[in-house]
Figure 1 (cartoon, rainbow, N blue to C red):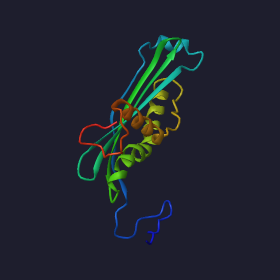
Figure 2 (cartoon, rainbow, N blue to C red):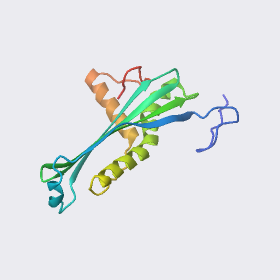
Figure 3 (spheres, one colour):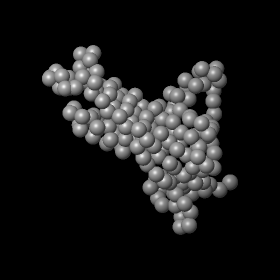
Figure 4 (cartoon, one colour):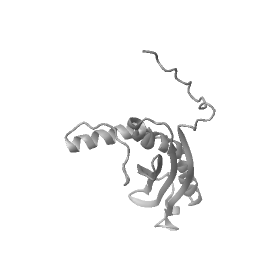
Length: 174
């Protein structure tokens, strides 16, 4: 049995064939930033706020090969148990998958697509915190593959089974 030669990483698809993954659109669906204790909280900024960051990925099928992927980022900064700021972002992208084997669709949609969206979402959160009067919040890189694997393991444990990856359904998939 002959093996099909693999293209080197970063290689362009052969002429006339679409790229396996196309970013059609990126957008801010929702962005909020609030400083509930302003302006008094700024007088207590002797040290940087204690930060918590929560990230979630959701996806839904829009067409046969088109998916909306939503990267949700929620951050909170606290100073001695007092909320200094809250920043929440829902950053989306619409992606077309071409010639991706069905068994890899879920992995591409929930790992590769958010990986491509993340730098833009990180930039928006950093600007919002900086423009809000705090040091820019530079969110550390996220291992979306590890996040995906944890989520799959949790889901399998809840169901008492081992699951095989399936493409996201029409509704939200996390």
